[in-house]
Amino acid sequence: MLLETATYAARKSSLAERFAQTRAHTEALCRPLQVEDYVVSSMADVSPTKWHLAHTSWFFETFLLDQHEPGYRSPNPRYAYLFNSYYVQAGERHCRAQRGLVTRPTVDEVFQYRRHVTDAVLALIGRLDGDEAHPAWKIIELGIHHEQQHQELMLTDIKHVFWMNPLHPAYRAPLPRTPRVPPLQWHGVEEGLYRIGHEGTDFAFDNEGPSHRVFLDAFRIGTRLVTNGEYLDFINDGGYRRTPLWLSSGWVAVRDNGWTAPLYWQESQDGWTEFTLAGDAPLDLASPVTHLSYYEADAYARWSGHRLPTEMQWEVAARAFPLQGNFVDHGRMHPGTAGEGMSQLYGDAWQWTQSSYVAYPGYTPSAGAIGEYNGKWMCDQWVLRGASCATPSSHARLTYRNFFPSDARWQFTGIRLVEGA
Image 1 (cartoon, rainbow, N blue to C red):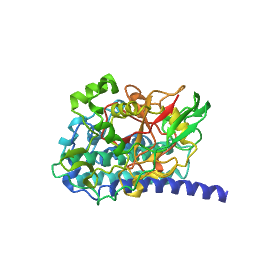
Image 2: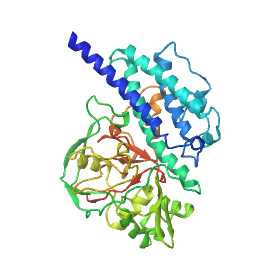
Image 3: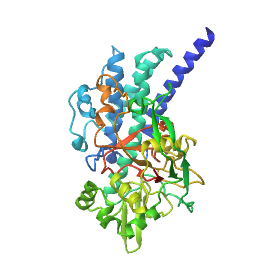
Image 4: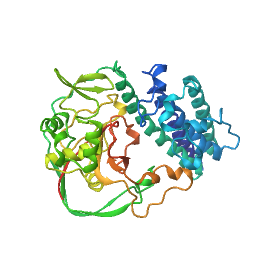
Protein backbone atom coordinates (compact mmCIF):
# COMPACT_ATOMS: atom_id res chain seq x y z
CA MET A 1 0.00 0.00 0.00
CA LEU A 2 2.86 2.39 0.77
CA LEU A 3 4.44 1.57 -2.62
CA GLU A 4 1.13 2.20 -4.38
CA THR A 5 0.72 5.55 -2.63
CA ALA A 6 4.28 6.54 -3.51
CA THR A 7 3.71 5.60 -7.15
CA TYR A 8 0.52 7.68 -7.34
CA ALA A 9 2.30 10.62 -5.76
CA ALA A 10 5.13 10.32 -8.28
CA ARG A 11 2.69 10.23 -11.20
CA LYS A 12 0.76 13.23 -9.89
CA SER A 13 4.00 15.13 -9.33
CA SER A 14 5.28 14.21 -12.78
CA LEU A 15 2.13 15.42 -14.53
CA ALA A 16 2.06 18.63 -12.50
CA GLU A 17 5.74 19.27 -13.19
CA ARG A 18 5.41 18.65 -16.91
CA PHE A 19 2.38 20.90 -17.10
CA ALA A 20 4.07 23.68 -15.12
CA GLN A 21 7.31 23.37 -17.11
CA THR A 22 5.42 23.54 -20.40
CA ARG A 23 3.54 26.65 -19.34
CA ALA A 24 6.76 28.26 -18.11
CA HIS A 25 8.63 27.44 -21.33
CA THR A 26 5.91 29.10 -23.42
CA GLU A 27 6.35 32.29 -21.45
CA ALA A 28 10.15 32.02 -21.53
CA LEU A 29 9.98 32.13 -25.33
CA CYS A 30 8.41 35.59 -24.97
CA ARG A 31 11.30 37.14 -23.05
CA PRO A 32 13.13 38.55 -26.10
CA LEU A 33 9.94 40.29 -27.24
CA GLN A 34 8.70 43.81 -26.63
CA VAL A 35 5.01 44.40 -25.98
CA GLU A 36 4.49 45.72 -29.54
CA ASP A 37 5.70 42.38 -30.95
CA TYR A 38 2.89 40.40 -29.31
CA VAL A 39 0.03 41.77 -31.40
CA VAL A 40 1.16 41.51 -35.03
CA SER A 41 -0.10 39.04 -37.65
CA SER A 42 1.94 39.29 -40.84
CA MET A 43 -0.18 36.90 -42.97
CA ALA A 44 -3.21 34.65 -42.56
CA ASP A 45 -1.11 31.66 -41.42
CA VAL A 46 0.67 33.70 -38.74
CA SER A 47 -1.05 34.30 -35.41
CA PRO A 48 0.05 36.98 -32.96
CA THR A 49 2.13 35.80 -30.01
CA LYS A 50 -0.59 37.13 -27.71
CA TRP A 51 -3.13 34.89 -29.42
CA HIS A 52 -0.96 31.78 -28.94
CA LEU A 53 -0.59 32.59 -25.25
CA ALA A 54 -4.35 32.90 -24.87
CA HIS A 55 -5.38 30.03 -27.17
CA THR A 56 -3.31 27.46 -25.27
CA SER A 57 -5.09 28.60 -22.11
CA TRP A 58 -8.49 28.50 -23.82
CA PHE A 59 -7.74 24.87 -24.78
CA PHE A 60 -7.31 23.82 -21.14
CA GLU A 61 -10.28 25.93 -20.12
CA THR A 62 -12.64 24.54 -22.76
CA PHE A 63 -11.72 20.86 -22.90
CA LEU A 64 -10.56 20.32 -19.33
CA LEU A 65 -11.79 22.83 -16.75
CA ASP A 66 -15.27 23.40 -18.16
CA GLN A 67 -15.80 19.63 -18.27
CA HIS A 68 -14.09 18.40 -15.11
CA GLU A 69 -14.05 21.35 -12.71
CA PRO A 70 -17.68 22.27 -11.88
CA GLY A 71 -16.75 25.39 -9.93
CA TYR A 72 -14.47 26.86 -12.59
CA ARG A 73 -15.31 30.31 -13.94
CA SER A 74 -13.53 32.02 -16.82
CA PRO A 75 -12.24 35.55 -16.15
CA ASN A 76 -14.03 36.59 -19.35
CA PRO A 77 -16.50 34.27 -21.15
CA ARG A 78 -16.04 36.28 -24.36
CA TYR A 79 -12.46 34.96 -24.63
CA ALA A 80 -13.96 31.74 -26.00
CA TYR A 81 -14.95 33.56 -29.20
CA LEU A 82 -11.55 35.26 -29.59
CA PHE A 83 -9.29 32.32 -28.81
CA ASN A 84 -11.02 29.30 -30.31
CA SER A 85 -9.04 28.27 -33.39
CA TYR A 86 -10.99 25.87 -35.62
CA TYR A 87 -13.17 23.77 -33.29
CA VAL A 88 -16.58 24.20 -34.86
CA GLN A 89 -18.31 22.11 -32.20
CA ALA A 90 -16.86 24.37 -29.48
CA GLY A 91 -18.68 27.43 -30.77
CA GLU A 92 -18.28 30.44 -33.04
CA ARG A 93 -14.79 31.78 -33.72
CA HIS A 94 -13.14 35.05 -34.60
CA CYS A 95 -11.76 35.24 -38.15
CA ARG A 96 -8.20 33.87 -38.24
CA ALA A 97 -6.95 36.48 -40.70
CA GLN A 98 -8.13 39.26 -38.36
CA ARG A 99 -6.38 38.12 -35.18
CA GLY A 100 -3.78 40.85 -35.61
CA LEU A 101 -6.50 43.50 -35.33
CA VAL A 102 -7.42 42.54 -31.76
CA THR A 103 -5.62 44.95 -29.42
CA ARG A 104 -7.70 44.00 -26.40
CA PRO A 105 -7.40 42.09 -24.12
CA THR A 106 -4.01 43.61 -23.43
CA VAL A 107 -0.85 41.53 -23.19
CA ASP A 108 -0.93 41.94 -19.43
CA GLU A 109 -4.52 40.73 -19.29
CA VAL A 110 -3.61 37.68 -21.37
CA PHE A 111 -0.83 36.79 -18.92
CA GLN A 112 -3.33 37.18 -16.08
CA TYR A 113 -5.65 34.82 -17.97
CA ARG A 114 -2.82 32.31 -18.29
CA ARG A 115 -2.10 32.43 -14.56
CA HIS A 116 -5.80 31.94 -13.79
CA VAL A 117 -5.95 28.81 -15.98
CA THR A 118 -2.59 27.46 -14.81
CA ASP A 119 -3.59 27.69 -11.16
CA ALA A 120 -6.90 25.96 -11.84
CA VAL A 121 -5.27 23.10 -13.77
CA LEU A 122 -2.63 22.54 -11.08
CA ALA A 123 -5.36 22.41 -8.45
CA LEU A 124 -7.27 19.86 -10.54
CA ILE A 125 -4.15 17.71 -10.97
CA GLY A 126 -3.77 17.70 -7.20
CA ARG A 127 -7.32 16.42 -6.78
CA LEU A 128 -6.79 13.66 -9.37
CA ASP A 129 -4.33 12.15 -6.88
CA GLY A 130 -2.42 10.25 -9.56
CA ASP A 131 -5.54 8.60 -11.03
CA GLU A 132 -4.49 8.04 -14.65
CA ALA A 133 -7.83 6.40 -15.42
CA HIS A 134 -9.65 9.69 -14.81
CA PRO A 135 -10.73 11.17 -18.19
CA ALA A 136 -9.16 14.51 -17.24
CA TRP A 137 -5.70 12.93 -17.18
CA LYS A 138 -5.59 12.30 -20.92
CA ILE A 139 -6.91 15.79 -21.66
CA ILE A 140 -4.08 17.30 -19.61
CA GLU A 141 -1.56 15.17 -21.50
CA LEU A 142 -3.07 16.28 -24.80
CA GLY A 143 -3.07 19.91 -23.67
CA ILE A 144 0.63 19.76 -22.80
CA HIS A 145 1.50 18.48 -26.27
CA HIS A 146 -0.89 20.94 -27.88
CA GLU A 147 0.91 23.77 -26.11
CA GLN A 148 4.28 22.42 -27.29
CA GLN A 149 2.99 22.62 -30.85
CA HIS A 150 2.15 26.26 -30.27
CA GLN A 151 5.59 26.91 -28.81
CA GLU A 152 6.99 25.96 -32.22
CA LEU A 153 4.38 28.07 -33.99
CA MET A 154 5.21 31.05 -31.79
CA LEU A 155 8.82 30.95 -33.01
CA THR A 156 8.01 30.43 -36.69
CA ASP A 157 5.30 33.10 -36.53
CA ILE A 158 7.46 35.73 -34.84
CA LYS A 159 10.21 34.96 -37.35
CA HIS A 160 7.84 35.86 -40.17
CA VAL A 161 6.67 38.97 -38.28
CA PHE A 162 10.26 40.16 -37.83
CA TRP A 163 11.10 39.39 -41.48
CA MET A 164 8.18 41.53 -42.64
CA ASN A 165 9.57 44.43 -40.60
CA PRO A 166 11.97 46.45 -42.81
CA LEU A 167 14.40 46.65 -39.87
CA HIS A 168 14.70 42.82 -39.81
CA PRO A 169 15.14 42.72 -36.01
CA ALA A 170 16.79 39.74 -34.32
CA TYR A 171 15.06 37.51 -31.80
CA ARG A 172 18.28 35.94 -30.53
CA ALA A 173 22.05 36.51 -30.53
CA PRO A 174 24.12 35.90 -33.71
CA LEU A 175 24.49 32.30 -34.83
CA PRO A 176 27.79 30.44 -35.25
CA ARG A 177 28.57 29.22 -38.76
CA THR A 178 28.02 25.56 -39.61
CA PRO A 179 31.22 23.51 -40.01
CA ARG A 180 31.88 21.59 -43.20
CA VAL A 181 29.07 19.17 -43.94
CA PRO A 182 29.88 15.46 -44.50
CA PRO A 183 29.23 13.99 -47.97
CA LEU A 184 25.74 12.67 -48.60
CA GLN A 185 25.69 8.91 -48.21
CA TRP A 186 22.93 6.33 -48.35
CA HIS A 187 21.49 4.00 -45.73
CA GLY A 188 19.94 0.84 -47.11
CA VAL A 189 16.70 -0.74 -45.90
CA GLU A 190 15.81 -4.27 -46.95
CA GLU A 191 12.58 -5.34 -48.62
CA GLY A 192 10.08 -6.67 -46.14
CA LEU A 193 6.88 -6.50 -44.16
CA TYR A 194 7.04 -3.87 -41.40
CA ARG A 195 4.73 -2.53 -38.71
CA ILE A 196 4.37 1.25 -38.43
CA GLY A 197 2.33 3.57 -36.26
CA HIS A 198 2.14 4.11 -32.53
CA GLU A 199 1.93 1.18 -30.12
CA GLY A 200 1.97 1.12 -26.34
CA THR A 201 0.66 3.41 -23.62
CA ASP A 202 2.94 6.43 -24.07
CA PHE A 203 1.30 9.60 -25.35
CA ALA A 204 0.60 9.93 -29.07
CA PHE A 205 -1.90 11.91 -31.12
CA ASP A 206 -4.81 9.89 -32.46
CA ASN A 207 -3.57 10.20 -36.06
CA GLU A 208 -0.43 8.18 -35.20
CA GLY A 209 -2.43 4.95 -34.98
CA PRO A 210 -3.58 2.33 -35.19
CA SER A 211 -0.36 0.41 -35.72
CA HIS A 212 -0.53 -1.60 -38.94
CA ARG A 213 1.62 -3.55 -41.38
CA VAL A 214 3.09 -2.23 -44.62
CA PHE A 215 5.20 -3.92 -47.28
CA LEU A 216 8.23 -1.99 -48.54
CA ASP A 217 10.54 -2.73 -51.44
CA ALA A 218 14.23 -2.22 -50.73
CA PHE A 219 15.34 1.43 -50.77
CA ARG A 220 18.17 3.72 -49.71
CA ILE A 221 17.65 6.91 -47.74
CA GLY A 222 19.97 9.89 -47.47
CA THR A 223 22.08 10.08 -44.31
CA ARG A 224 21.49 13.84 -43.88
CA LEU A 225 19.31 16.69 -45.04
CA VAL A 226 19.89 18.60 -48.28
CA THR A 227 22.01 21.71 -47.66
CA ASN A 228 21.68 25.33 -48.71
CA GLY A 229 24.66 24.87 -51.00
CA GLU A 230 23.09 21.91 -52.77
CA TYR A 231 19.80 23.75 -53.14
CA LEU A 232 21.66 26.77 -54.52
CA ASP A 233 22.95 24.49 -57.30
CA PHE A 234 19.32 23.74 -58.16
CA ILE A 235 18.58 27.47 -58.32
CA ASN A 236 21.66 28.21 -60.45
CA ASP A 237 20.66 25.42 -62.83
CA GLY A 238 17.38 27.21 -63.50
CA GLY A 239 15.30 25.05 -61.17
CA TYR A 240 12.62 27.70 -60.70
CA ARG A 241 12.37 28.25 -64.46
CA ARG A 242 12.17 24.63 -65.67
CA THR A 243 8.53 23.63 -65.99
CA PRO A 244 9.12 19.83 -66.29
CA LEU A 245 10.50 19.70 -62.73
CA TRP A 246 7.28 20.93 -61.16
CA LEU A 247 3.88 19.51 -60.36
CA SER A 248 1.19 21.42 -62.23
CA SER A 249 -0.14 23.25 -59.17
CA GLY A 250 3.44 23.79 -58.01
CA TRP A 251 4.30 25.58 -61.23
CA VAL A 252 1.23 27.78 -60.75
CA ALA A 253 2.43 28.61 -57.21
CA VAL A 254 5.91 29.50 -58.50
CA ARG A 255 4.48 31.75 -61.19
CA ASP A 256 1.76 33.40 -59.11
CA ASN A 257 3.92 33.98 -56.02
CA GLY A 258 7.09 34.89 -57.88
CA TRP A 259 9.15 32.23 -56.06
CA THR A 260 12.83 32.18 -57.07
CA ALA A 261 14.36 30.83 -53.83
CA PRO A 262 13.32 29.52 -50.39
CA LEU A 263 11.47 31.85 -48.06
CA TYR A 264 13.86 34.22 -46.24
CA TRP A 265 16.59 34.05 -48.93
CA GLN A 266 17.65 37.33 -50.54
CA GLU A 267 20.15 37.85 -53.38
CA SER A 268 22.23 41.02 -53.74
CA GLN A 269 25.47 42.10 -55.40
CA ASP A 270 27.31 40.69 -52.38
CA GLY A 271 25.71 37.25 -52.75
CA TRP A 272 22.93 35.42 -50.97
CA THR A 273 21.73 36.16 -47.45
CA GLU A 274 19.18 34.39 -45.27
CA PHE A 275 16.96 35.88 -42.58
CA THR A 276 17.08 33.88 -39.35
CA LEU A 277 15.85 34.37 -35.82
CA ALA A 278 19.25 36.00 -35.30
CA GLY A 279 18.54 38.47 -38.12
CA ASP A 280 20.11 38.66 -41.58
CA ALA A 281 23.27 36.62 -42.22
CA PRO A 282 25.31 35.44 -45.22
CA LEU A 283 23.84 32.20 -46.54
CA ASP A 284 25.42 29.27 -44.68
CA LEU A 285 26.02 26.76 -47.48
CA ALA A 286 26.60 23.85 -45.09
CA SER A 287 23.37 24.37 -43.15
CA PRO A 288 20.23 22.39 -44.12
CA VAL A 289 17.95 24.21 -46.52
CA THR A 290 14.62 25.01 -44.91
CA HIS A 291 11.41 27.00 -45.32
CA LEU A 292 10.52 25.11 -48.48
CA SER A 293 7.07 24.15 -49.71
CA TYR A 294 6.21 20.59 -50.68
CA TYR A 295 6.31 21.78 -54.28
CA GLU A 296 9.90 22.98 -53.94
CA ALA A 297 11.03 19.85 -52.10
CA ASP A 298 9.46 17.65 -54.76
CA ALA A 299 10.96 19.67 -57.63
CA TYR A 300 14.43 19.52 -56.07
CA ALA A 301 14.16 15.76 -55.57
CA ARG A 302 13.18 15.33 -59.22
CA TRP A 303 16.03 17.60 -60.38
CA SER A 304 18.55 15.60 -58.31
CA GLY A 305 17.38 12.29 -59.77
CA HIS A 306 15.87 11.07 -56.52
CA ARG A 307 12.54 11.18 -54.69
CA LEU A 308 11.09 12.25 -51.37
CA PRO A 309 10.56 9.32 -48.99
CA THR A 310 7.14 7.99 -48.16
CA GLU A 311 6.28 8.36 -44.50
CA MET A 312 6.45 4.55 -44.20
CA GLN A 313 10.01 4.53 -45.57
CA TRP A 314 11.02 7.34 -43.23
CA GLU A 315 9.63 5.63 -40.12
CA VAL A 316 11.12 2.22 -40.91
CA ALA A 317 14.54 3.74 -41.62
CA ALA A 318 14.46 6.03 -38.55
CA ARG A 319 13.55 3.34 -36.02
CA ALA A 320 17.11 2.00 -36.09
CA PHE A 321 18.54 5.28 -34.78
CA PRO A 322 18.27 7.24 -31.50
CA LEU A 323 15.84 10.09 -31.04
CA GLN A 324 18.34 12.93 -30.81
CA GLY A 325 19.00 16.14 -32.67
CA ASN A 326 19.06 19.93 -32.70
CA PHE A 327 15.87 20.82 -30.83
CA VAL A 328 14.66 24.15 -29.44
CA ASP A 329 16.10 23.08 -26.07
CA HIS A 330 19.59 23.64 -27.47
CA GLY A 331 18.85 27.33 -28.07
CA ARG A 332 20.14 27.53 -31.66
CA MET A 333 16.67 27.85 -33.20
CA HIS A 334 18.09 27.31 -36.67
CA PRO A 335 19.14 24.19 -38.58
CA GLY A 336 22.64 23.06 -37.64
CA THR A 337 25.41 20.63 -38.40
CA ALA A 338 25.02 17.13 -39.83
CA GLY A 339 26.98 14.42 -38.08
CA GLU A 340 28.74 11.43 -39.59
CA GLY A 341 26.51 8.54 -40.60
CA MET A 342 22.73 8.82 -40.31
CA SER A 343 21.88 12.18 -38.76
CA GLN A 344 19.27 14.96 -38.64
CA LEU A 345 16.34 12.56 -38.45
CA TYR A 346 15.01 14.70 -35.60
CA GLY A 347 15.52 18.40 -35.04
CA ASP A 348 16.83 20.89 -37.62
CA ALA A 349 13.93 20.64 -40.08
CA TRP A 350 10.69 18.77 -40.59
CA GLN A 351 11.08 16.53 -43.62
CA TRP A 352 8.51 16.49 -46.39
CA THR A 353 7.35 13.04 -47.48
CA GLN A 354 5.47 12.10 -50.64
CA SER A 355 2.66 10.66 -48.49
CA SER A 356 -0.72 12.33 -48.44
CA TYR A 357 -2.06 12.98 -44.97
CA VAL A 358 -4.83 10.40 -44.74
CA ALA A 359 -6.17 8.11 -42.03
CA TYR A 360 -4.37 4.91 -41.15
CA PRO A 361 -6.46 1.72 -41.63
CA GLY A 362 -8.91 1.46 -38.75
CA TYR A 363 -8.44 5.08 -37.58
CA THR A 364 -11.25 6.60 -35.55
CA PRO A 365 -11.04 10.23 -34.41
CA SER A 366 -11.64 11.07 -30.77
CA ALA A 367 -15.23 11.75 -29.79
CA GLY A 368 -16.64 15.26 -29.56
CA ALA A 369 -15.09 18.59 -30.51
CA ILE A 370 -11.60 17.42 -29.59
CA GLY A 371 -11.88 14.91 -32.44
CA GLU A 372 -11.46 17.87 -34.80
CA TYR A 373 -7.83 18.15 -33.65
CA ASN A 374 -6.44 15.94 -36.42
CA GLY A 375 -9.10 14.04 -38.33
CA LYS A 376 -10.77 16.98 -40.06
CA TRP A 377 -7.53 17.90 -41.88
CA MET A 378 -7.10 14.59 -43.72
CA CYS A 379 -7.43 16.13 -47.17
CA ASP A 380 -5.07 18.17 -49.38
CA GLN A 381 -2.17 17.95 -46.90
CA TRP A 382 1.22 16.21 -46.95
CA VAL A 383 2.91 14.37 -44.09
CA LEU A 384 6.18 15.63 -42.63
CA ARG A 385 8.32 13.53 -40.30
CA GLY A 386 11.01 14.13 -37.71
CA ALA A 387 11.03 17.45 -35.87
CA SER A 388 12.63 20.88 -36.24
CA CYS A 389 15.01 23.24 -34.47
CA ALA A 390 11.90 24.88 -32.96
CA THR A 391 10.46 21.62 -31.59
CA PRO A 392 10.85 20.73 -27.88
CA SER A 393 12.80 17.47 -27.56
CA SER A 394 10.10 15.94 -25.34
CA HIS A 395 7.57 16.51 -28.13
CA ALA A 396 9.39 14.48 -30.80
CA ARG A 397 8.50 10.85 -31.56
CA LEU A 398 9.25 8.24 -34.20
CA THR A 399 5.57 8.01 -35.15
CA TYR A 400 4.76 11.76 -35.11
CA ARG A 401 2.77 12.78 -38.22
CA ASN A 402 3.04 16.51 -38.86
CA PHE A 403 1.13 17.85 -41.86
CA PHE A 404 0.83 21.00 -43.95
CA PRO A 405 -0.64 21.99 -47.33
CA SER A 406 1.57 21.92 -50.42
CA ASP A 407 2.40 25.63 -50.51
CA ALA A 408 3.27 26.17 -46.82
CA ARG A 409 6.77 27.66 -46.38
CA TRP A 410 6.91 29.51 -43.05
CA GLN A 411 7.70 26.41 -41.00
CA PHE A 412 11.19 24.87 -40.66
CA THR A 413 10.62 22.37 -43.48
CA GLY A 414 13.41 20.66 -45.41
CA ILE A 415 14.40 17.76 -47.65
CA ARG A 416 15.68 14.21 -47.17
CA LEU A 417 16.06 12.10 -50.32
CA VAL A 418 15.56 8.44 -51.15
CA GLU A 419 16.57 6.30 -54.08
CA GLY A 420 15.46 2.86 -55.14
CA ALA A 421 11.90 1.54 -55.11
